[in-house]
Image 1 (spheres, rainbow, N blue to C red):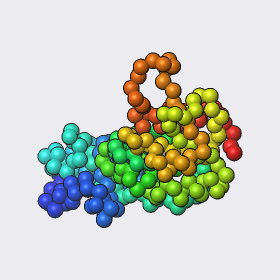
Image 2 (tube, rainbow, N blue to C red):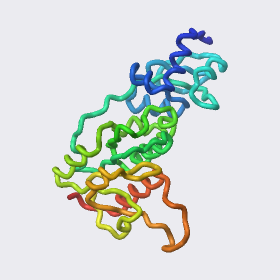
Image 3 (cartoon, one colour):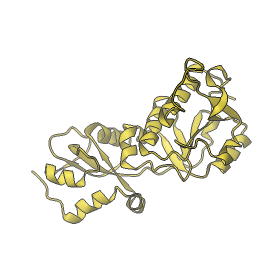
Image 4 (cartoon, rainbow, N blue to C red):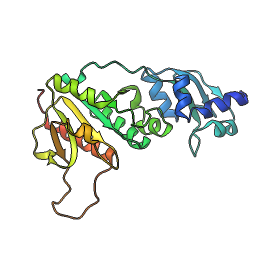
Length: 253
């Protein structure tokens, strides 16, 4: 049976494209059978789920027409499954850097890059990311789609990075950052715990944060001296950095 949705309900779901309405309601939109299923299986709560056909999901769903789905969807090509999800409550600072790596994002503005970083963190067993207030919203549709479900396994919170780094150095853990004039990451001594700062797509790590980094790292191009692009995309760079840290089998400090 196809359910009819009110114009107000359709308009509300569409309004969740805007961060202001996501913040006011505590809700966001996820689309796709696998993504929605993974988020729900990972413990996130669905306020409502809509489908245009048969779909294997762990919760009940309302069947709607493809035309209504097209009006509600946040994607250019609507998926047959759309869920209105409740945001996760961000966990308080738990000094996770004492036992594991923590990512700090300094003004990463592209939602797709942010989603890729969350997905990479999940793959490499990094469970905590701290974003500066100028970083993109994790519940932006592009971010949510790019995480491929990792959003339910990685804790992300927003706060100024300078006080965060002060706490990390106070705990005696290293603070790493990527720079074009840093030391070759493949030749550097790395630890299995600490804070890794990744910077803005165009400007890198801000000056105030850069001055607090204790270990400046470089991802070198190959071969040395060959003409290449100016730098790596921050999502790709983060995945490379996480891979190198994990591949070393480094010890905690």
